Image (cartoon, rainbow, N blue to C red; front, side, top):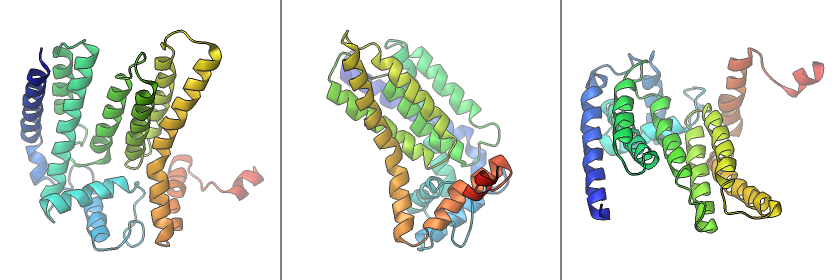
Length: 271
């Protein structure tokens, strides 16, 4: 099939997923803040204050990474200072994830679209369950994690090494952005790290020294992209004099939530 025909079909599929997602998530436009115990309202208030020049974690506090507030900010900028902007952003995120799943399934099916279409349709349907009509973190970071795994499976092990390194940096960057939306993405990134080693195992036969060098360089590009968003965010808060607030909300509070106690050097020394 010609490339032009493939692009036309992909465009139609993307439009179809977008219409379907908007129809399935239509109730979200009238149930703001109900589906997830008010998280949407909190994110919206923080985003609105952020656009007014007030940094997150300073006046209105939450323990989520800054990424979710930036997405809400983008929604307000694009679609207006209204709660409908968050519902629109959620629909677009789910539709894009459906399309990525379609492309991923088509890749795994050697060009056959059935698997990808089924994956996209199932995600569009089941993403409305478990309170996910709300514009919450899970449906936004899924865009970046799905993109990352799709790109990883596209690595051309017999093609340009330099091109593969660029793709690995892009994968790491996408996962780093996902991490800035929710920290649980760290487990998906661990899977990416493992799968990268497996993918590089199928390079044309070389010496062990070559393989080790190639794997090491691949991890440098992957990790560089992954940590870049966190470094930029930390520097931003440091420049604005609120680095301690950033650390407290993103790390200290979540450690306390998971472990049940505040983790400090003093407590480790006591143990």
